[in-house]
Image (cartoon, rainbow, N blue to C red; front, side, top):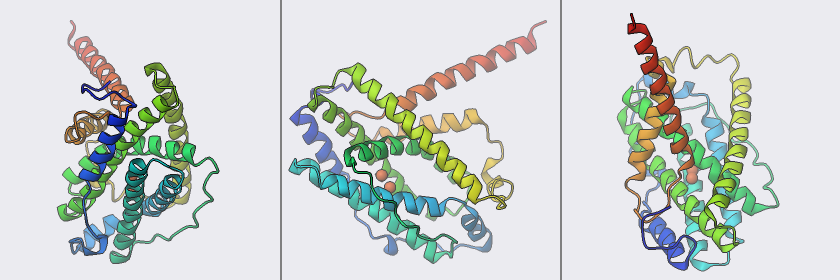
Length: 289
Ligand SMILES: [Fe+2]
Ligand SMILES: [Fe+2]
């Protein structure tokens, strides 16, 4: 539920989330960003990150899906906003490409797989996937930045990308709710059921990607070498706390009248409450006579 006067699924709601998307657009050209010079140690850490090829592919595929979906959208206001998202996803791929070339990262462009025939479902799958990736990415980004994994200028560049992903997922959850209402499936329980189904599919894909990545990177021991910089003192609870807090912080700058992704923050909230309870019980047991 949102706390404003716009009814979810209404024309006013659509106008609000489309206009917000345009109003928060940031203009930049990836090649013209202030890319810092890196010393050998930082360069080594950047090059050892095992997922740049996957990130480049994901962003290129994102651009293709969003553009293909926008071609099927007839509402001019929506189409314009989705076109802008497509442009931003393609620019993300450009940004990664610029970084790969500039710092001599070993990653190549893979052939894009054929897009699914049901492009609206592909857009939904992509949107829920983004919600999941962003929630976890917010935490990873904070931990890596605080640990000084790379110079801060590098994180400032990627901050643009994180901000855009925040806008994308806010736009997406509002579009999704609007769309369900338009289709007569806007009841809260139906929206919840749809989220659950799509998050389940996103999780399955994420596990598949992780497995593929682990296979491809067999032999490159990233975790034991380069990631040690920020894995010191890493615990699952701290990671979840960072994801949760960063999500709340990033969402707080979005228009109050818009829906936000709630599924993962709620899940994390429950998990954190259980972890806290568990550790306070443990402490109590340890101090009991
Ligand atoms: Fe992106
Ligand atoms: Fe995105």
